[in-house]
Length: 266
Image (cartoon, rainbow, N blue to C red; front, top):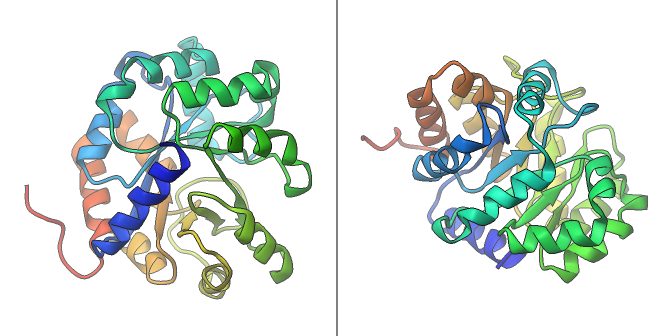
């Protein structure tokens, strides 16, 4: 399972002529008791995979919305260990790939080898570590490989093409294309430079390329997906769930995954 499951699932969605859509939610925001229900809802709504954030006290890549969600999760007593335990508890009930987004400090505190082993046991398919540069990734990447978990790399718009090519060559599962300069958060528009950047990544990547950061509307998702394979949406999803607007979450996913047609009727 793991990496193979993630890559197979994404490829099947693309074969079915869907744009990929990976929603981000913060584990423990609203309590860990609702995590199974929320993951099930996102899967039923058409999510290609689900990115699950682990709350951390110093989230350098996160904008205000996700920082606030992390604070709420920490106040609920959420920890990496608790998240892995609850994922294990309903592992057999889910088919949608799960990707953990966490920083290096919680992994180091947990123990890198044990982290990889427990991710595998809990049915985690991929891991994103925003503060781990390519030059230092070996200590984690090797252990994830042993557990057949995809190590998903992030690419930045400011990187030269030779570095983007190397990151693309190393990425597993999918390549996370950071499509803005700055932290996460909903934005009304992306710069024109992002199109060339996404096309460059597509040229070098053998895995799907997904644009993340700043995506908040169906029109944005479809427009960016026309230059790559799909999008990752975090802050908007977190806001909608926090406001109780679950029907809007479903509409955003359904509208984004169908490039030429209206979202399927419910």
